[in-house]
Length: 320
Ligand SMILES: [Zn+2]
Image (cartoon, rainbow, N blue to C red):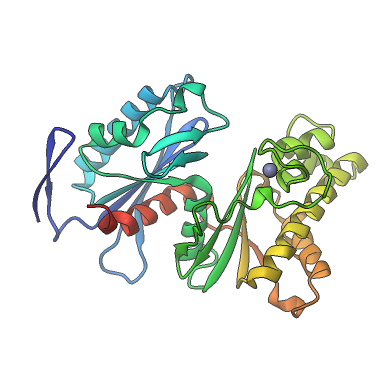
């Protein structure tokens, strides 16, 4: 395809061998990577995953340098990559590629020309994606909901994110579709960071579960609940009730093929998945209970990077 001028550097773009899709998922303490081969098999094949620890300051310039170092290392090993998707744990302006809200990162990220800086350093266009949306696409295309038509994913961490995926594509609506953490489940409930009251996140975010359960972390709450701690179990029940109410409303609206649960809190497994499915079924009376299915994600900690790679590959032709 010739040579593309970008960011001062020249990159050869070769259609016959440029079928590798790279995903870079920026988390609180590390960058996880996934390299996918989009040729050959009908399903994308993950050929490499890795994890790189981030400098503790997590200043945006240092993170950009780290992304460039990682990408160069992978290019040296596997050759040119056709597309790059970068997952961010928060919100950003789509047109400028500038972060607007990254709750667990330094304030210096806000307004930082992130996409432009990364593209200049890498000498290649990138696609910026939200990490929960990336998880959702990965689990819907190659994970536990692979091949299903409509999938609703919920990602339980410090915040509660989500994504609606139809036919392997994220449903954006006007842009903000799928922010399931901010469904109202208690009319005059506790205030949420978003400005509303009674959001799912105020009950089912990891900080909410930990503090209501009287423990330092959400893992301690689930461990204590499993051993019969009444206060811990009450916090787990409260989170499941809020999630169940929110997802019941989503089921009534969309009737998706399945819900997929991911994120740190999802590590609770059986303490969460079965009771959550039961809670949604208890509230939905417009469809047979067997229509309602909740499954854990199957791709583990690299789901976000795999999804970023898939979304990057998808978006590639749309940007000139
Ligand atoms: Zn909210």
